[in-house]
Length: 415
Image 1: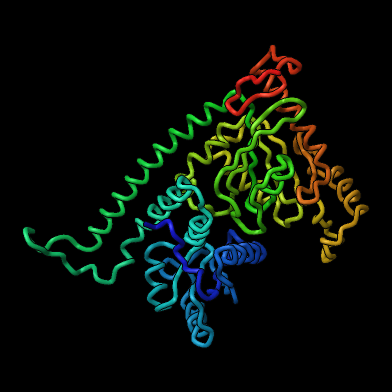
Image 2: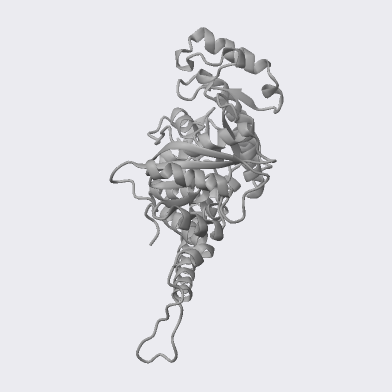
């Protein structure tokens, strides 16, 4: 079973170093930003990053990701500064991992994908999420099995077996293949149950919260639904979909909080979280939440839009919700304490943003602070407009005076 964290974080606080490359496709500023995000990922996984190493190369070295000189520099530094792991900001090939593990001896070697998988394994709460993560872990590790054994030449033999038997690697590959097949069958069964539940809710308009990780989706859901939804200032605070029934403008609808997206999200996770992503695919309306205070919010928007395109959900009516208005600082005021924003600051920020190009990119744009509940009325108005259009497309003769609410299955409750 792999549905437990691949890194033990229950004992002492583990330490790590981070390694990234400056390439022809990624300048120093971007590399520094990605390493900062990698440090946040490490912190979320329970590992403290104490140093970063960067190197300028046209492309990653095929053998060790970094060049020989940089590898020796890291090894020399590690002699006097022991750590538990070396984490690279890109996916490593099996041969790169094998060579790096040989170079670093007892120190664990992780890449960004494996770190994200570890965080998902820590955060999975439901049986479905645990199986999804475990499947993603096995799919991730399967092509890397060749570097996990130092005794591949050993042969298994036994009573009743002809010849030397099978290699350890072949046996382990078969075990992993069997486990992958088992998990896929289990998830198929769970997916069928999820489809049935979604069909039962299909008569209600469905709205899904989407966005980059840690932009405040769960906080916004808590503010709109007035429900106790888990929210935390960590990446992937929640990975299980949460559904709440709301009524706005006397129109009932379902609001779903979904897993956040991130740059370089492992494809195995996207494949494994099919059922969770179906909540987005089958939604009628999307609330695309963006952290407007983040320096790279435009890239975050692009990452989310690309992912939505990959899963076939990029053509839905969407409200672009720029969140964290209270933390937003114009470039001219960067360096000031964002947490000391006054009411006057918020008014100025809102006026600036509404006059900016951001408000002209779409018909449905709103600027809010979910944490402080600022400007939520404007968001509610936009939501009501869209859900009303969709609702009356489903029920053209619906009379709210006669049938004000639905029950969970979407059936009329009446008065």
